[in-house]
Image (cartoon, rainbow, N blue to C red; front, side, top):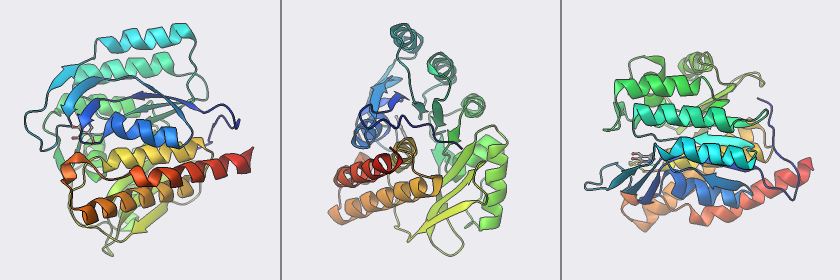
Length: 296
Ligand code: PXL
């Protein structure tokens, strides 16, 4: 995948972030906005819905659907002539919303813009409770428009219509899955949240313009950590837009996610409210500034 960052030191790359705004329980926009701003990007938010919290194991959340606003907001941005270096999508609430997100991608995409689809649908072998079979098909269609996709193993199985197995993975089987994911259309596929057969956790990456798959492995930290897929994808996008090679971007995203999880574990806060990534923002700024300076 050719990176297409706006490498001017002065003009930050502009990203259209099409995600929900969950007020508490850091995920989607409340991760993408701070992370990508710290990484030197301008983030234009196109909220798909407003919730009091995310939907994962927090009963009683409020939900206001904004699907009908998406085409109008995208048309307004297009009318203003806003040009985006990247379009970034994640969680969606319905098949109709996924179709509106897909239309917004078409409206906002200009030549050279990078489209990252994080096909948020489930984890640990199960779909999130709001997801349906129709939504899986709609997400698969959205992935065909992407340059980069970042499913976890559950989402990869759903996208490929394959059974999910909880068994630890070998690099060989992961390479097969990556190949199938690339056949959906993207230039680059990352599988996140992998338990490797040697007990480590990590990600697997395949990029059409890089020979050989890349495996990033880190010591496992047990537990269920909310919003970490959103953190990983946001960091990966920010690093890519700064011009970092795919392996460096994946390693930074993995390290940032592990550090934030580790800090949250030490602090013993309720993991449902997200991981403590705030202390990583300085490092993220440094990383992207270094790459921008190197490539300018
Ligand atoms: O982190 C993914 C996510 C984003 N947004 C909402 C969610 C979830 C996962 O459950 O519920 C609203």
